[in-house]
Length: 393
Image 1 (cartoon, rainbow, N blue to C red):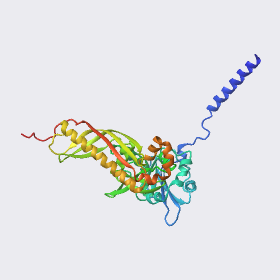
Image 2: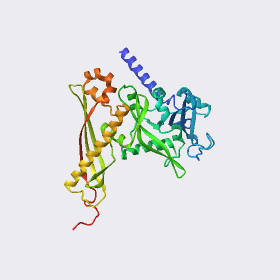
Image 3: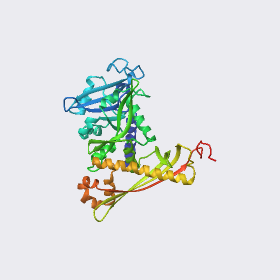
C-alpha cells in the first residue's frame, strides 16, 4: 500500500514538472526584428579566382515597410539588402556577413537558390552541402539556373511584389498555366545527385530590359548531368519532358486541321511509362498519354464542332504531343542525360537485369526505342459551336 502511495506521489510530481517546463517558453526563440531574413540565395563563379561568389537577398524586418533604396547598400531606410561576398566555401562567407550587418542571417523563409550559368557548368554538388546540412534550410526551396550571373537576378526590379525573390517564386507557381517550365525542389535535386543515372532539370531564368525597366523571364530548363549543367531545353522540349513525367497541369496545344489553325486547352493529362527488355537486349519504352482538351479558339470558317472535325483535331493533338516528346527525347540523347528517369522504370520492373546493365546505362540510353500510345479527347467547344462566320449557302 505504501508503495502505491509513493508511486502516485512521484507521478504527480513528474506531471507537475512537465507542466512547469511547458510554461517556460522556447529556450532558443529569436525575435524576428532581431534577424535578417534570407529570401533568396545566388551562387556564381568569382572573377579571376576559383572562389564562390555568394549573394544573399535579405529583409531587415526592423525597417520593413519603409522606403526602399537599392542604390546604397545597407543605407538608412532600406528594407531589402543584397549582400555579396566571395570565398572558397559558402558557410564562412555566410557567417562573415555579420561583419556587414548586425544581425545573423535566418534561412527558414528562403524562397529560391539560383546558380549562375558558369557556376552550374562547373558542378554544384559541394555547394549544396551547406543547404542540405543546415537545419534552417527548407528542402522544398526552388532551385533555378540563371542564363547569366545569379547576382543579376536579385538586382532586377520586380514587376508586382517588392521582394524580387518572392516575385520569382510566384512566377514559378504560375508556370502551371503553360507547362513549359520545369520546377526543381532542393529535395528532388538531392535525390538525383545521389543517383548515377538520372538527370535533373532546373528552370532557366533571365533578366530582360524593356522601356528602361528590368524584369524576369522563366522558360525552358537547364539539364544537369550528375551535378554539372550540360545543356538547355527550350519550351517545347521542356513540355515534352513534362508529358512523359506526368507533370502537365495545363497549357495550350496549337494544332492544324483542314488547313486551319485551332488552339486546344489542356484540361487534364495522365502518363504511363512501360519499359520492355527484349531477348536481344534492346530496350523499348512505351509511353502512354491520355489527355483531355477543350476547343479554346480557332481561325477560319470551318465548323470544328462536328464529330468528324473534332476527331481530326484530336488526331492533330496526338501528333503535336508526340512531336514535343520526341523533340525532348532527341535532345536528351544528344546531351546523354536521362531527364525522364527511364532508368528508375527499368530498375523497378527488372531489378535483377538492372544490376547487370546499370553500369552501361549511359551507352544504353542512347539506343533505347520509343513507342507511343497517345489518346486526345476533346470534350468541350466553349459557349459556341459554330465559328462566327456567315453560313455558306
